[in-house]
Amino acid sequence: MRSREQAELLLRKAAQDEFAITKLAPDPASSDEIVGFHAQQAVEKTLKAVLAWREIPYRLTHDLAELIDLARDGGIEVPEELEEVRWLTRYATVFRYEALPAEPERPFDRHWAAQCVLRTRAWAESIIHHS
Image 1: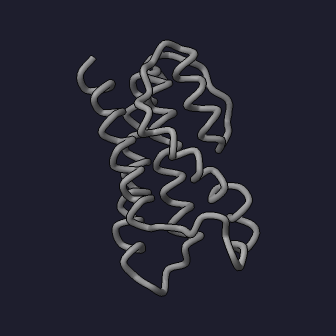
Image 2 (image 1 turned 90 degrees about the horizontal axis):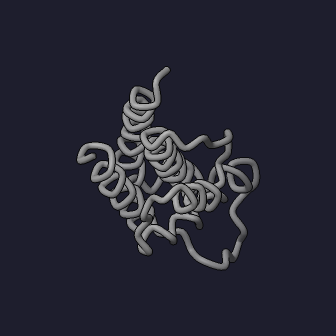
């Protein structure tokens, strides 16, 4: 698959995770882990879409810090406000298979997670649809 086609596919897949967040986040019966997982997945796929668009190779990983660093190393300007998305990585790794700690160091904020997804998508679209 060509890199541009891959980028568009990843954006469509990220939109599916974003849709899940909009449906699950307002429902108190939805766990923080599943909302966090879909937020992480949306951000991951969006970051990978930008990397694919710019033809920057990436490995199969859930590590958002690694993907952000790859983008920067590849000459892509990543806004400082996206730095905080790194915190979502744990929702695709540790918290996907383990329970959230009883007293987390940082309580999960569903609104914040949704905003991370929206900001990442807006940034990615500015690169992909305007270059």
